[in-house]
Length: 524
Image (cartoon, rainbow, N blue to C red; front, side, top):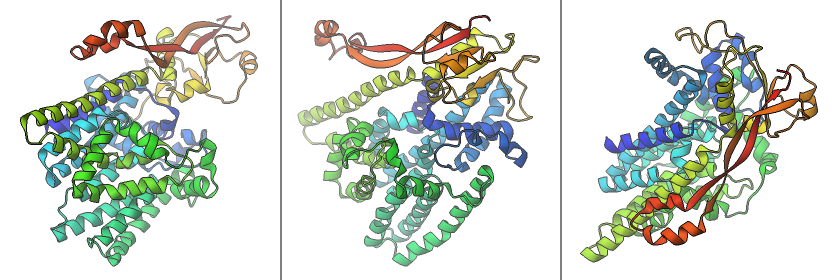
């Protein structure tokens, strides 16, 4: 139970220290906002954000609807307790709910590791997973991959936790796992199919399931999953028939449009993104794979998945996030092996080495987390804007939000002084009665001259500090730029770092630069 709470706590900390979001999270975040604020009746759909900003391809709202509904009891509880004061609080609650669900998936995986390997292996699995940056940080972020992460972990946990010798239990577990992965690939992320394929072949070749049993699983899952996403998404997009993941496959793979977002060399996942995700757990995972046949059996389909997805030109670390827990199982087994060697001196050396790797993970994660905390200037600008001008400000501000601000935190939940204010009749009204409605304007491709010649625009969150003299800057928002090493401090303190590692904060300095300005029209 303590380890489960530790996983949950780490996921919550990442949400609370970096509460703002970026553009890649916006579709699902805003869909969740709209479901909460407007409901799902046909009359509400025209106000949904995806009709204003549809994106390159339609995406499923299944996850957003489920997340919104799962969050309602917690929003209601926060309202009763008096800790819910603005729409931004709802964003944090929604993200905490998502983080909790994904943490539950990891806890299920941890228990599977304990059954298949040992309790000590599950402890190392937890320490390694929580000491990494990307997985805990993104578990509470509304990427499509984050919605796919929970069912994928449940599926892999079923496989990991079963003893292949107990044929009947293993067969049932593999059927459910393959069904979950099929469901996930059809609804949330089509690349799961590239993981499902080698896993299915592996299952058949090892005699766990027959080809006929695999077909039976497919028949039981494929049609209901396609029907679910088609019905739900056709309704929300008002286009029939619509299967978003099939549409995305056609656009990104068949038409090759994903290349518009850049391409990477063939081995990028192995040489760049896997080390980035695993950090110093990588050498431990290599060791675990070498020493334990059970680990190899689990990891081979994951490696084959990375090989298959490497054939696609456009590559992002989040496309392979699903197999990180498998590599962490391998790393946990490697750490367990090192810490149980015979011989007191050898064991102490290897325990120190393992501890050093985990410590390195923690230090790197601290640096990455600190950088991320200061990497959302749009969110910071919105918060500063609301602190500078009260909700009752007259005349009510008309704020134009620049592209950078919109992409780095200025979500709909931060439109705190404009409707909708109430996610349900159950909750208390916001803001204070009688406050005028602000206007938040995210019109794209608008020039500085157009803003100057639009007298209704009273304030601008801009990437420039000067707009022809018509606007005056009232605040500046700095954000993370890079890390720098203070060489003088390094020379002075390097001898103390082994015994006083906290002195590192005096050597490594965060450099921030001006990213955004809040401007006010001069005649106001």
